[in-house]
Amino acid sequence: MPLAEPILCKRIPTPPWGDPRDRALVTLDQYLETDGYQALRQAVKTDPKDVIDLVKASELRGRGGAGFPAGMKWSFLPPEDGDRRYLAINCDEAEPGTFKDRMIVDFDPHILLEGIAICMHACRLDTAYIYIRGEYHAQAKTLQHAVAEAYKYSVFGKDSILGQINGRDPQCYVHRGAGAYICGEETALLESLEGKRGWPRIKPPFPAVEGAFARPTIINNVETLAMVGPIVLKGADWFKSMGTQRPEGAPPTVPASFGPKLYGVSGHVNRPGVYEDELGITLSELIENHCGGMRNGKKFKAAIPGGISMGILGTDQYDAKLDFDIGKAYGCLGLGTAGVIVMDEDTDIVAATRNIVRFFAHESCGQCTPCREGTAWMYKLLTRIENGGGTTNDLDLLLELAGSMGSMPGTTICGLADGANWAVRTILNKFRGDFEKRVRKQRYVSLPVAATR
Ligand SMILES: Cc1cc2nc3c(=O)[nH]c(=O)nc-3n(C[C@H](O)[C@H](O)[C@H](O)COP(=O)(O)O)c2cc1C
Ligand code: SF4
Image (cartoon, rainbow, N blue to C red; front, side, top):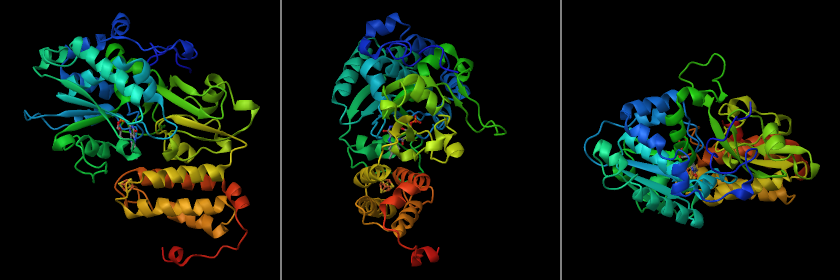
């Protein structure tokens, strides 16, 4: 079922409810006139624990890529000890194909600030750092201005709405990154926030226990936090009336895919852009109903469901359901950021894969050997294959290389290597014919390393 009314896009004209050309920054006054900060006023009258229970009951899952349940994350915080506790808002958004958080910040930054304030109340946090990617110059300015408005309106600062309730003096800062993709990984983000090189940390300890400045820290994505206000106003059942149920037979501990979602679509469609709809709409609905179909009437070839780390959907998966179970159902890693990259029949999939791996090789922080060396080797192999100098052995070597790296096999610290692995493995498995056409037909010879495994 399509979404009945816009939720995150309530104030941002978005098809089918509005024309993107009418978009303009929502000022604090306009935000207040449209129920703005009502959810915060309601939340601060509620016991913090009950706010966490409400978010838990809604089963809101993180929108930053991993889909971890937000309420559960909030409940991992240790009891207060009188010292500082932090909120880090992940606005790094460097995953290729992902630009949904940018739309919130560009046009309705107060919906994010309201979510931040509610989270600070619920989790009893003192300081929020909005970590925004270095390339978002205009967005950083917009946010800074909105934060200043929020201080004036007493959302943050001395005698704030929060301060009156829990006796704190909550602060909110905008912190600009310097343009490294890895700083979107939550622990690299914390290192960068502390002024160090953005290297992911070994976990545990997890940030909820030992995060920024070795203090308890909650890290959430922009869209996740923007969703909190509407949940507080309308309730968990309302949120759960949208989206898809957990898979049949799965225990209640397995989270479902409830609520609306921002889908950012790029590539070979007639109308690329950010669209809001329920979780669980199909890829074909997204392309046909929201994006005006494939560009120039071309046939669909493939789509990357949520940023390049998630692997690929094949030509026969045009009707894939875009929810958090997409990974198991369609042989990719997951929904990720729902930054969908659509490719038509003319796409050179070998060149696209080489380009994807070039990105990972460039952005690997270099701490883990399988990631640092593996991404670089894959890039070299793919360049050779693209240029017509590869062999069928190279295709198997690529698969072996990809499969040997990633935090899931337990050889790397963070998920970047997994992303490179899933991208290469799924593309090669689903489009092997495209690669075979590019290589010299040479009989496969088992590699000694493969034989010893
Ligand atoms: C290499 C890498 C890059 C990431 N980049 C981002 C990002 O730009 N924005 C984001 O919200 N999460 C990103 N994540 C996921 C974060 O580590 C973390 O899971 C997320 O911010 C948690 O917020 P959520 O639970 O609200 O989704 C990235 C993860 C990895 C491994
Ligand atoms: S997996 Fe890659 S990016 Fe992540 S910590 Fe290791 S080397 Fe760095």
